[in-house]
Image (cartoon, rainbow, N blue to C red; front, side, top):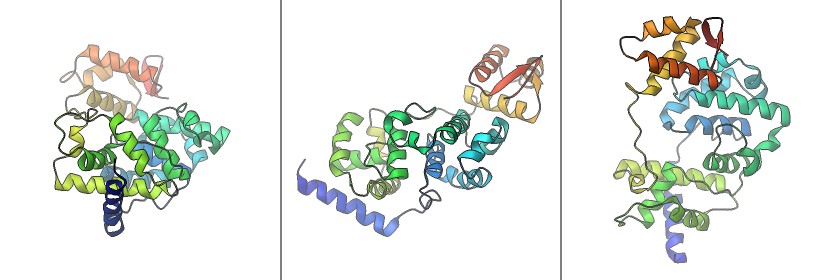
Amino acid sequence: MLKAELNRFKKEVLAYYRSSRREMPWRTRTHPYFIVVSEIMLQQTQVDRVRAKFVSFVERFPDWDSLAKASSHEVLSEWSGLGYNRRGLYLKRIAEVVAKEGENVLKSKESLLELPGIGPNTAGSILAFAFNQPALFIETNIRSVFIHFFFNDAKRKISDAELFPLIEQTLDKENPREWYYALMDYGSHLKKLHPNPSRKSAHHVKQSSFKGSNRELRSNILKMIMKKSSSRATIEKAFAASWDPIKIKKNLLDLEKEGFITKKRESYQIV
């Protein structure tokens, strides 16, 4: 890639960022705790849904210790509305590790990947945003920017393996935090002007409908148990009109195995 083309690309992204930077509550709080909370919340969830929930969550659990000491019921109650409830439990478990071992476990990709709910891209984003480390990662808005600029005329799907060399070549190693913010803001802007460029990605997956999905059933079961300990028979009766008892049984077993609920005598309750 010609250096002049890369420089033009960087100037255009930064020019937009300087004039139209998005304000996020986690961008003004770069302590690792706030960054980890926001990055876990932002997994598979749009920014607008996360903003308000982030503020209320960190007001209720302002640091690692308060989150580590909270009950699963308290965490899931506060998490309610964001979806993918296992992320709330992952966050609590991360807090338990950090409260015990210290924040050094967050300072390397290797140790981050050992924590629940953190994959390579989330690890990279935590390193960049919490510690301003020039770690490589990609997410949907970053993907959109690079596909739009460098593969706009491609008639095939573009893999992340093709994008990472460009991300590395353009990365601001002195201030990766702000550069990644600029990329993400510009990617969000592009999606308002053009059909979503990330649809050209080989990794693009259209999210399935929540209504009528197994995710909806899991969520409804969890909400019911959070309100009141319930037996399997009571849960099956509550959802009999819409759901197969076999699916209900499987979800109860899965929720128990994943650490959401526990069974005492004949009733399920939040762990």
